Length: 424
Image (cartoon, rainbow, N blue to C red; front, top):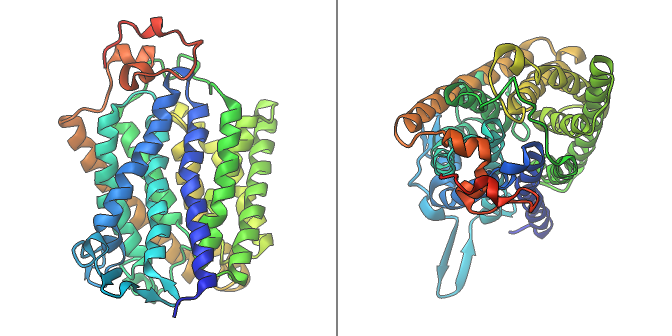
């Protein structure tokens, strides 16, 4: 029997998570220079287009099919094009139902996670890559990295309660610390190492062109994240409420932690820091939202804000051009959120007398997720580099990608004359 209340809750949650990717587009779009803002927005929207098709064809099946291939991914043909999710006959539609929820609703919820995860990566390679190469990478990466990790963690695969590491303790990833943020963060790092730096990185100022866009994007992400985390309770119940409160609390604490770090280090608490701190807190609480007390969420978020505020500067020390700090925010806070569960979880956390078992398994699943995503991303990135190529021409990169690639410019003040001789 269909639970109409749960169904309504999950449809709302799915819609909130869908909003996050356009919100991310604004967040990233404001952070790039004005000559490339449309390209940055289009990278998020393009990922939505590609993944919205692939998920229905085989992404759902690869993630959640009953037939598991080595605990790594589900059989992509078992529920190809949502076969078995619904049927249509003389009496109309009949929908498969799981625990009161029509499975088709869960498909809608889960596709939004795949979209946002892939779009997150785009911020690391802003200002310098071919749009076609990005779309090809998006389709291949979601197929070979995201869908398998979703299966491993949430589809009863290697990193789930049914996997080999569960003998140590039950792994915890409430809404995507490994599947979403570690996965996207390590992919971003591998990509920037293979694709290389923007022209002028480290010698030219590459400041955000529209900080109100950045703050608007952060606000939309925060709003949508309630679907991400509270929706992952799969019920409108107390756990969803706890996840909602923990999400708010950790995010607020991370923002304060980031601003304090900036003030002490630089003498200014910036709007960019506030927006980035919000995202760091959202990232960190994602795997832990249903496992911590609100006080624990404050600790988790505060540390995430400080760690990510410090980590974003590492690209200058080590010389990798992570354009919009995907590594510093999503990888670092994703790792901390995943590992922090081992310290702060009410059930099994080290600080609550649970010993080291949960902490050990959280470290293991984080390391496995990083290794898997890094290997897949490296193969794909090198393959695209050798075939399609990643980089736009130097002339296009200097003048700006928008008009050269998309035939449009965001602002009239950026005269088309600057692009008149540019060829994609």
